[in-house]
Picture 1 (tube, rainbow, N blue to C red):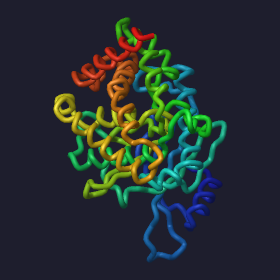
Picture 2: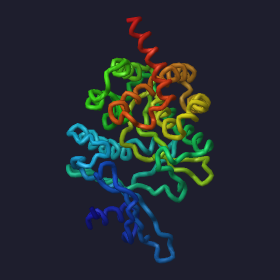
Picture 3: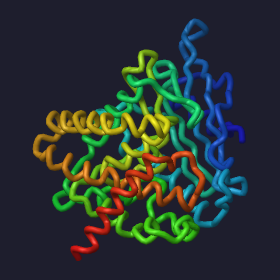
Picture 4: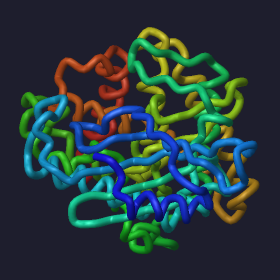
Amino acid sequence: MPLSPQQQDAICQASNCRQIEDVALIQSLWAEQGELVRLILQPNGGDNTARQTLIVKQIHFQSAVNHPRGWNTQRSDQRKRQSYEVELHWYRHFAALAQQAAAMPSLIYSELTDNGALLVMEDLASDFPIRFTQGRDDRPDQCQIESCIRWLAAFHGQFIHHAEQSPLASKLSYLWPIGGYWHLQTRPDEYQAMAVGPLKQAAKHLDALLQQCPYQTLNHGDAKLANFCFAETGRSVAAVDYQYVGVGPGVKDLMLLLSSVMPDERLLAEADGLVDYYFEQLQSELQAKQPAIDGADVVRHWRSLYAVAWADFHRFLAGWSPKHWKMGKYCQQQTERALIMVNGAVEQQ
């Protein structure tokens, strides 16, 4: 759907440009609920001034009749609509604070109506031109993986709090009370679709362990490889797509990232080292930015929940897409560890 003349005028005014010269489609949004496009704008400075580009996320609230996995339900539609509203509020109210720690686009202009939303954002392509968007067939190198991990550590360190001392969720009503698109409360259909077994039986206990952790932060909520943009050197990175930002322990983001950056056999061999690297970076961030928080205690709690985060995600995949490629030996290994934890916790009750 093309931008209206009023929207074009508003974008030009917000970006201090003369007019929109061209619009290039980047991709359709999930379930064909909108488009991501790049605008090329003519600046006010004349012909010799470099053209400015912006990214526009144009969302149409409608039923997902072409959902890629077949989950065409009213609940799915409402969750997706809420996710776009969350992203808009994230950019309006929280992104500036997050940018003090981690690179991400700035918001130029936005609209929210009953029929959809419009987000006009800074184009990261000049500074962060490299992206990986082919799923299991598109893999980064070690430098790029470590850049993503540092980004997560900085992001989590910016927003970390102790649940009893600073109930962050109550202050962030615009965002998801629980970060991530797969958490149990919003996925009852997928839960019902799961085969009966130990993982399904443990689902509520796994969810409770994550929610009851005394240290919470903001999760990006969809920290997969495709949502990171890399500099040419690979040593710096920015992240996009904030539809599922919400509260949780940082290992939920770490788990999702690692699930997307390397195949199963490499996870079995290398994931432990990357987990250690994340916690080293997190402790460094906390020492620099949050000295009142006991970094070692955060690491102790979050490290114990790493396997739980994997099992929680495994629970979602088992109902949503039972043959998904991410449910490999490493995922199963972590799930088995988490189930042992759950059984021990239940026995102590």
